[in-house]
Amino acid sequence: MGFLKSTIKGFSLISFLRILTRLITFAKTVIIARILFPYEFGVFGIVSLTLTFLEILTETGVNVVLIQEEKISKTYTSSAWIVSIIRGFIIAFLMIFSRYLVASFFHSPEVTNLLLWASLIPILRGFINPSVIQFQKNLLFEKEFKIKFLSFFAEAFFSIILVVILKSVLALILGVILGVIVEIFLSFKMATPRPCFSFSKDYLKKIISRGKWVTLAGIFNYFFSQGDSIAVGRILQTQDLGIYQMAYKIAILPITEITDVVSKVTFPVYLKISNDTARLKRAFLKTVASTFFLTLLPAVILFLFSKQIIYFVLGEKWLDCWPILKILSCFPPIKAITSSSLTLFYSVKKQEYVSLISFLSFLFLIIFVLPLILKYGLTGAALSVVFSSILLIPFTVYLIKKVF
Image (cartoon, rainbow, N blue to C red; front, side, top):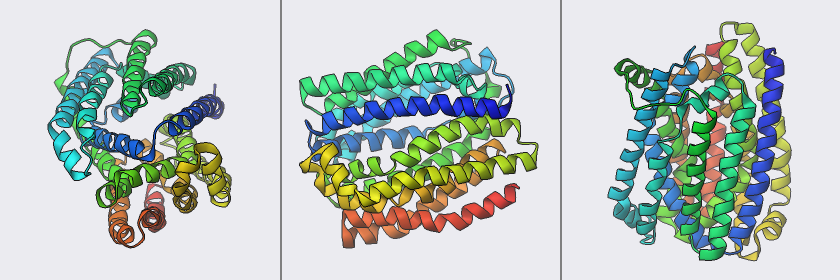
């Protein structure tokens, strides 16, 4: 099967997976939003911010290195597995150790006990079989579809059931834990080679050498994608954080759904044609154009009908979301340009370009976010995201030209 047919097949399967997961997410969000309140979503948002930050801070770049390898041996897989397990325990320790500091920073004492429960998540994630990355590398999207869908469905199912029973934000954390357990089981059942407790020093050096740029890029990208939420949680109230994150989650659905699908499919394809510059350029330009126009229509719908969408989907208690959603709806088409470029940079092993783009994203956000939040509140946070994304475009275009 040619790369074009593989790309189309992969795009179709992953798109179908995304449609299914979004339908499940839609049902999950509607049910949970009508049981829990914005304040409780804000508390869960703080837990998520903490976990995500520590995961990125300790990111090893294992998956990127595995995809870039021509052949993945059991030694490589086992080494990656050991690194992931150790990383999981380190993250858990940091979550437990920092829980009072996090609670104090966000003025939310409720997160202290929740962070203890959430510390189980990185430990469990560390045991997922790294060999699942070969499904993406070898364009075996059917197998990736099964694992991702079943584990996602399990998380959503358990979260809904537990929220109905417990009527507490703890249910969301327990749902994630149960979903990860399902993913561990599936990863060992479906992916080979299965890792064992062995370690290669040479492979560790390779991870550190190649993965350092992935880690650095992840840190800067985290502060760009979550810096506004951190500022909202720190400067305003926990309820405001819940409102803002709900609006942000809805607004970025077009860009996350489309770009995640496109990047998963195009990354292995770009790798295979990376030595043919003309072919790579054509493929990249088509991808950027398609991604931009695919995100434009949902962005327009969100902009025009933001208030109606919030009211009918989430209910009256979430109506404070709609002015923020209206502004953030402009974000996806702008972000589509820079997001598409990151996959290109990874495919030509220019991880330093990804780090630079992520750093500039973070820098521009810092310039805008604090003064705008202090002056305009939640609306200012949304404006800071849009303004910083616009400023990033010329720098991204410059780096793209350097690649070609």
